[in-house]
Image 1 (cartoon, each protein chain N blue to C red):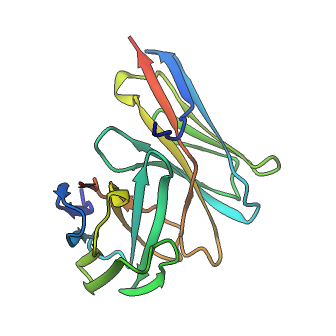
Image 2 (tube, each protein chain N blue to C red):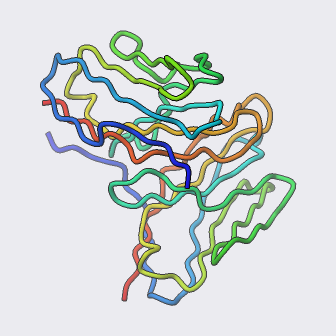
Length: 114
Length: 114
């Protein structure tokens, strides 16, 4: 029969525009959150992380926002470049008892159009 | 840059054969994770080790899968006997347990069971 895979949400942006990728998490005990980027044929690559005592953290061209009230995480990429095309995953873990055992979201495909 | 190394990168074999995948974690990391990624299920945690001791292997089919850490520089994941449904990309990641530092991933072993 026909195989059905996960339907990854896709975000298409023009080169130079800003990208916003969203993630909803369900475990209210999660206190540490990570964004990973996965390019074709490669493993997930760490981008940025944030702890629950913060609501915003900035890196180089990337910003992560955390809203614990609604259990929502977002990744903003400024001036999106073709090299940003990849699948982006959010991951979460509780501070205690998790032993940094992560739970991953299903991912979002980012496509950068020239 | 320190990185997680996985071998082989690709493996094609017939069902019933034993498959061994190897992982060299980042030197000094005390926690090693094995994940499986498929189109159907996304990224799933199979097992993880802390200081070479297995902490959780609840995600791993026990009848045919086994994971070990013979020493601090080598983690192995074995499948015996292999089945077509085991076809997937298997990732190893390493990190510092209990510190909420991000895990770092290798580039995976792409396994095809015919």
